[in-house]
Image (cartoon, rainbow, N blue to C red; front, side, top):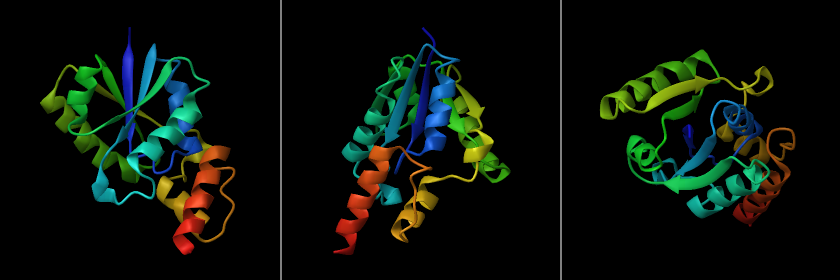
Length: 162
C-alpha cells in the first residue's frame, strides 16, 4: 500500500489544501492529513479543533485519514509506514524553504521521499494566514474554505471580539 503524509498546521484548512489532498488520492492508496501540533505559530484553533475541521472536510474521501503529530515529521511518516511526504508549493517564494526541509528530511530518513504539488492556479494566492485576515476584517471567505470551516472561523473571531 502506497501511503503519503500531507503535513501542515491547517489553521484553518483551505480549499487549496483540499485540492492537494484530492489530487494526492489519485497517486497514493492512502493519504494521511497530519495536523502538526506546532504551538510556536500561535494558532487560532487548538490542535483538537484543527483536527476536527480536517476530519469533517475529508470524511467523503474513503482513502484519506486525518491525524495529528508532534515531533519529527519523518519519524511520524515512518510510524505510519509512509513512503512519501507531500508539500504544497504556491509560489516560487515557497520553494527555497520547502526545498531545505525536504533535504533535511532526506538526511534524517532517506526512505521517505518528498513530493511537491502545486494547487490549481485558482488557489495559488490562498493561505490560511490570508483567509484569517480576510475573515477578521469582515470579508467573505466562503469561496476559500469549506462551509464548516467558515462557520468555525466566524464563531471564533466573534468570540475574540467580545
